[in-house]
Length: 83
Image 1 (cartoon, rainbow, N blue to C red):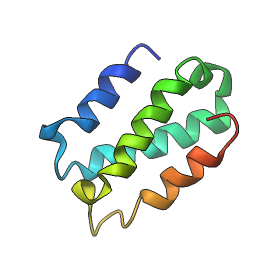
Image 2 (image 1 turned 90 degrees about the vertical axis):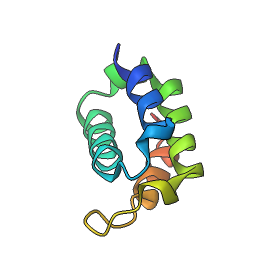
Image 3 (image 1 turned 180 degrees about the vertical axis):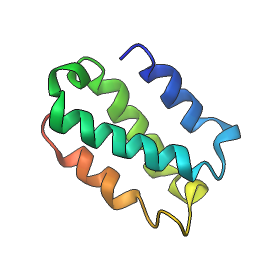
Image 4 (image 1 turned 180 degrees about the horizontal axis):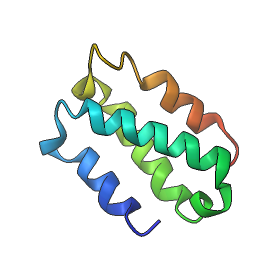
């Protein structure tokens, strides 16, 4: 939870163009933590939500044929009540 602000800032920075690996990994990590450690992620829920919104606003920056379109997965995260 202490690394969430730095990780989100990094993903939203100008240097994160084409950071499909990081965006995909972050999505997978958030999904896992919501499923298995919801109390821990709740502590940084607003930071995570803000980051997801920022990623979705700029999703074209993170396109990758390897991972496909991660936007639907991030939208599902936003729709989860514990997110």
